[in-house]
Image (cartoon, rainbow, N blue to C red; front, side):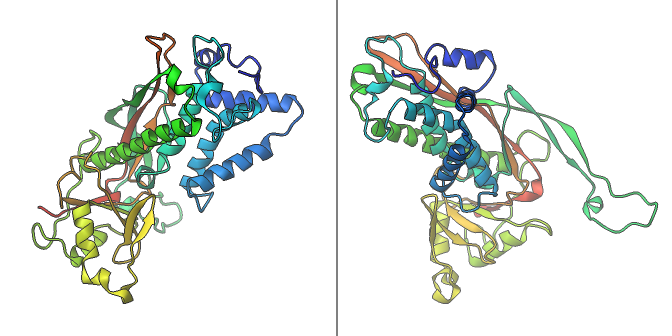
Length: 385
């Protein structure tokens, strides 16, 4: 490959990043920024343009929102890959994969798994509902997470007036006796070098995006499972709300689900399976044009407003969560302010160096755990109760 911004990038890129205990994509971005600054260039403008482009690609309307900040973080991870590809004159839309494989090379360029990882990361957050239901998504380089929470009595939660010299209500952050194990998620991609070299890069990227989008679905199912079942802490499982009539969903049940949230909490994201979503669409309250409850599309899935208009009800077709797998079973309601958070390791993009019968592999994997927060932030309507 032609030399890029970092001239010796191909001589141990991943090894050096691992030695410094850094995620390879983050390491690459930092090295590219350092190299550009040494050359007397100010990379801040180019980086900001890349952040804005990534936010637009992910449909971010408010750059200061949590999703906007998440998109900015992803852009910072992928900036180094983008700049190295530009410097090496690799066009992801018109070139074939051959440019990643040096003539006569026994192994692939480290930029090859880095490019695949970059496409995977962007696709993973472009669909699914996981990020809408969580209040934080943080990088944790460990095998498990010790859970902490806010401890406060119900009356202490109120910000009330106190007399001069009297004690203020106290809220503490403390550990609970729950250790949430990280689990490994990912996909191993195997390919034949002779075939892949002549394949357009845009096609391979499309395959990787499909893998990333499926992972977004799986993460959503994982979040729904933990919100229902709990994360192992005693009392973290949900207590279901029940309909007026078993196995029958009516408009008043949706109202009841919204009102299940107490003062200070509000459901913003509601998840219904296809059967319940169909029932909702056929309710007279939703068919009435004067009600202005039309179907809208977000993240390539339809949604309708809740009765109060304070949230959106999304149609969810995956059955990866046992609690959402039963047809016409549950409608989940989430206040994302403190419902749960995700701990994940950096993405591991490792290429297999041994070529067997011209077959090569790239592993894209990471560790992840979902930790449930305030139980008051999640409600579930069990239609079959």
